[in-house]
Length: 196
Picture 1: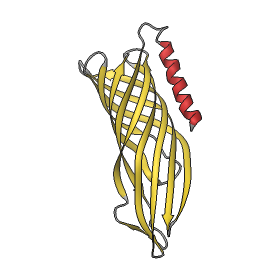
Picture 2: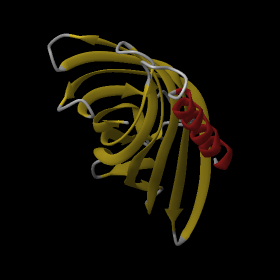
Picture 3: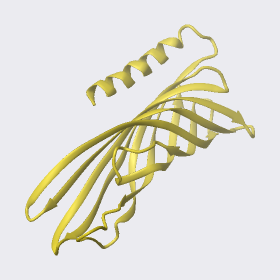
Picture 4: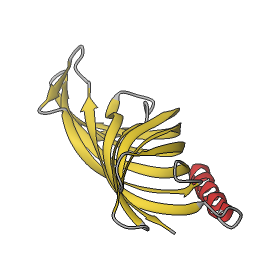
């Protein structure tokens, strides 16, 4: 995971360095909140879900990129999807599953103006997804880490408050995280961006 974080930082640093060489280009950075569905499909032989095993969880994201021109940009980011949990019974014994998910992504972004301060955009790239699942029962616990690279894609709209600050609303598809316990493939994000 440290190598992935360093790769994102190096990419963002390289994108920022490009601004000194291109008159039209602008680096930017932002933060956001993300809502994703967390689901635990655990019903099976001798296993029964207890209570609600499908919930919407909230997480956060940070991102940075380089606006090559008004229509095209390159962007990288990190998203934490929050924690999900579900109770179950296995042969009459109570247990609990917990998951923590995160993702790093790098994508190209294309924007198109639809009004004076409003753009629609799409992003396409790659995501590295990680999911940590912990199961516990009878005072014992076990933990597994799952990771998977997947296609990253997003569609959204952006509103420019002024020349430097804009707000965005988007649906992001990160792909699978290596198993079916915890967050689903996509989520809705609300973000704020500052252009340097």
